[in-house]
Image 1 (tube, rainbow, N blue to C red):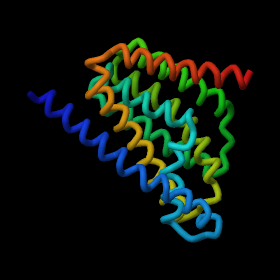
Image 2: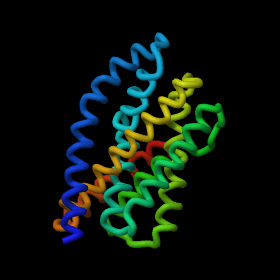
Image 3: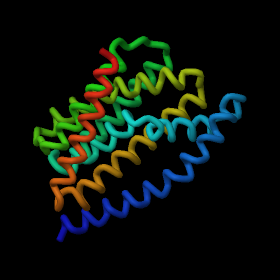
Image 4: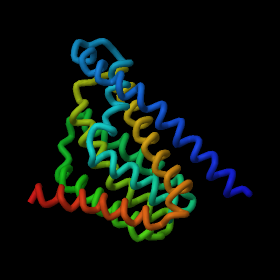
Amino acid sequence: MKSNITRHLLTAATIAATIAATPFTAMAHVGEHAHAHGHGAIDSFLQAFAHPFTGADHLAAMVAVGVWSALAVRPMWRAPLAFITLLVAGCVAGFAGLVVPGVEPMIAASVLVLGLLVAVQKRMPWGVAALLAGVFAFFHGAAHGAELSADTGLMAAAALAGMALGSATLHLTGMGLGNAVLQRHPWIARAGGIATATLGAFMLTRLA
């Protein structure tokens, strides 16, 4: 009974998060224009919230973390939480102008590895899972931070909040999918994981 309640709650959260993301993502395109003219923290928040949705690499990795956590990591919220925490740390590093080496290869590797973890539904202790997700997240955050590095003060704080919320939305989507659909249809998880890993492999070959 408890697992059914949890599954229904996550499904509802996924639907709510997806619906919530739609208008914010649309508004963020307006926000980018306004942000360029210094129109404030709200524009920074909207632009940063939409940022994880605008690249296939970031979107695939964050959804994969949620799916993998739902299928194979217990408690399932710890790897996504570690991802968001280290993502914010990477963003701060990017804002500060820190040059993090190997950002693009590590992002591509994260898509490949996380896709494979989903495909095989690899179980591991939550501490190891959180560490793995966190390491990848730092490089994703550094890339985001470098792209949004013009923000300062309140606008930077709003951008960090938007980035964290956008990423959490994708994690919730993945967790909801994992609990509501993929546990009952593991072949879908395998197919999705293989597709994600293929994207990561393609990205790596383009960097070679």
